[in-house]
Image 1 (cartoon, rainbow, N blue to C red):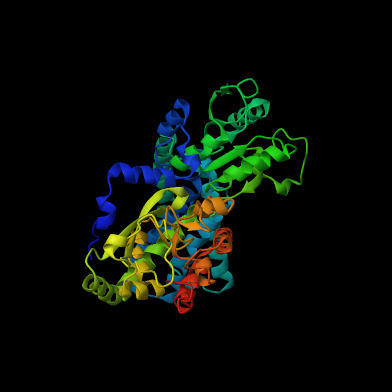
Image 2 (tube, rainbow, N blue to C red):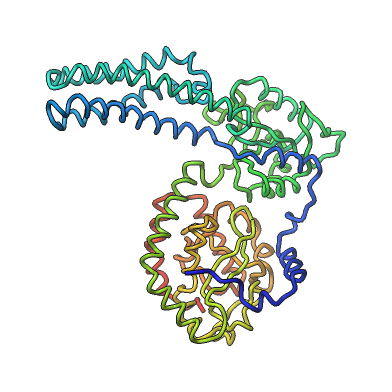
Length: 515
């Protein structure tokens, strides 16, 4: 099914008019002009990064399957031709890789530092590898199964497997060193706040090995007398308002606030601006005289921090959600294709114009995206900006449109947006640029409204299955919707997504607020 161009009414408007309208729709913070230093830092940060958590997860998986493959090949070549396939061998072939990964984890072989310097960690790897086979031997002995296994198999597996691990680790080390030189194997950070506290923090981080972060620069609202333009070799890139814009356009993983805990009011003022961003926020405890219990701190290298805010989805969470989205989007398109084809035909037969309607909305990190819908209005009455909310018995809505809006069938083409990565199956619903509640834009009604864009928007969401869908003609309706969106973000899990997907068809039966 092809996706046509926007509706005629939208195309007929001059580009300058559309651009001006879209600029008005973008929040004020995004129209801040960044400094030359900030733009230069953005250019430096354009290289795609590989986060340590994802790298180490991939290495664990690679070594598990590599050890499994070596054992399976030796077993298939030596044992199967003589004794056939036996369950005891299959169990052993599966258990050894698992024991090895656990042993390597215990020997601290799954750190970036260990991967960078394989020669130094080789004795540990040898001991962990011997411990793996020692455990297998002990279990076989006490299970009186020693005579059931081929000594040639396990001796060969021990030697070939270790040689394979050594070669793999040295090859991986070369690749990691290359990524390190290119600035790809790191978390990108900015420091919020300047002065002596910032300088002491930067020096402490610089003197610590393997922090795993690269600091792009500093942001501070204070003048150059209290917060110099250059500190500890880093540039001051702008104010906190400019940081919001900078973080929208740059892949930032971490914000480090250097203000002391005692500066509560200033910290709170900053948090009101920064908490809407999809990044980790840490408060430096390096220079603070106030000491908490050790478990209250997190550490970068040896430098202590207080965790203020975590990004909603970590690296593996993002991967899990992306796989979930695409698998179920494909299944949904296959299962719902008869309904979508029938809808397309009905829309086309009832009124002139394209079958699909494209509309700009706010997506992840407050970026503009275009979402697809089945056209539910007469072509000459389409409202691409949603400046006027659809009401009950709205004359702009066609007969087919009334039905597909009530049943949410008009949203089904957004499964294509899920496949392209612009939307998720589950998340806060993306709102149109000019959508209003009580004659005020949503962000003017709800404080912290844009925090709902810390994750990708979704086709369905926690708010929708709890009855907060349809018209938002009052302040309370958009406040409750945002409240549910923020609850979803803070409590996300794959099971939560699955539950919302299961409940959505049942909740769609309640159509009194949808028109």
